[in-house]
Image 1 (spheres, rainbow, N blue to C red):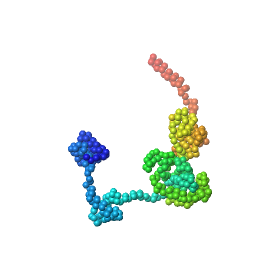
Image 2: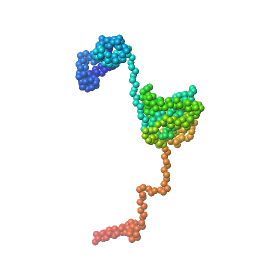
Image 3: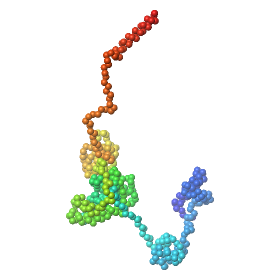
Image 4: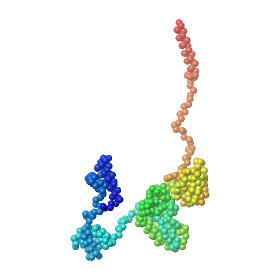
Amino acid sequence: MPKYSEVAWERAMKVQEVILRAMAKTITWWQAAEIVGVSPRSMRRWRQRYEEHGYDGLMDRRRGKPSPKRVPLAQAEEVLRLYQEKYADLNVRHFHEKLKEGHDIELSYTWVKQALQGAGLVKKGRKRGVHRKRRARRPLPGMLLHLDGSRHQWFQDQRWYDLIEIIDDATSETYYAQLVEEESTRTVMAALREVIERKGRFCALYSDRASHFFHTPAAGGPVSRERLSQVGRALQALGIEMIAAYSPQARGRSERRFGTWQGRLPQELRLAKITAVEEANRFLREHYIGEMNRKFSVPASQAGHAFLPLSGQNLDHIFSVQNERTVAQDNTVRMGDRTWQIEQTPWRGTLAGCRVTICEHLDGHVTLVYGPHVVGRYTATGEVLANSEKARAPRCGNDAPRKARKTPKTSLPPFPPRLEIRHKTPDSHIPTATTATPVSRKLKQGKKNQNRTDHVL
């Protein structure tokens, strides 16, 4: 009896269950065929085989039998013998042609190639690379920016530093270039914040899949769009799209620019006798970035730019490392080996059990935020900076302070206006209600007395 795989047994069990349901008339036979994924005619054949052979009739009868289209063994041996004895120096395509022309062997090229490779007579060819096409530049500056880092011995000694650079895709203009100890969340945030403060909000950022840019659930797989990094959260708050590069070739412009940096900057630093990182960054900012832009930037294909002005966003809050924690019963917040004490607020008795956001700013100070309220400001060592009970957390999208309403100099009348009707004193010959009342009573009393006298007479 041939050996069947686990998948074959599971399929046979599924077919048997469907056939039994159809026999019990809970479903029709054409519904059973649709569930299994076969035609109604095949379903009828399976029913007949199940009735005749039982459960074994549902297994694939082709298992263990040679394919009717299989090449005869003698012909396969003849092909291998001819290649070894006569055509060993021919390539597969040339050998396939000789089989047809000189030996009347009509076999497909794919079969001949796989037979020779399976016998070890021909090496398997290298897999073809993916065809890549050069991507056109964006037409306007500010539509797409590249951010990347290059680790190199920039001072031509044993020290290694990362050069973080932000360039524009449309013009290859360098907006930011600084040497740092390591490319990280804070150094990347500092670079992005400086560019946004000077140029404005841009449209999209193109970067690699480093952990401070994206969260990748599986190594080498696609990035997660639901779980954002600190940089991703900050750019999402500004409405900037993040694009992940899945190969170094995709970041060709920034990679080629780093080759230029590595071939020029170490020599420039040596000629300027600069050996410290602070002096090198000052040299880059004041002199060499402008020189690189003059030599290697290109004009954009269209006039104008795509940068947008900041509409009151609080960059100090947006570009901060934010983490949520629960306030303890003693109104303290703890993260790692650091603890912050929250003072009493006038709008709530205690914050115990509430979730607050810890904002670690780039300059080192820490802010605790609960909803729209800033409940604490601290230095990097944990000391209280200022009383922040009346401070408010920045609003999302627009953090500009509201202007106070100006009090008008002249007060306007209320709406609807009051109708002032002046009371006039009536004329003396017109009787008033108070004077008319006794006269009317006397008249009525006289009529009653007259009626009584008439009745008596």
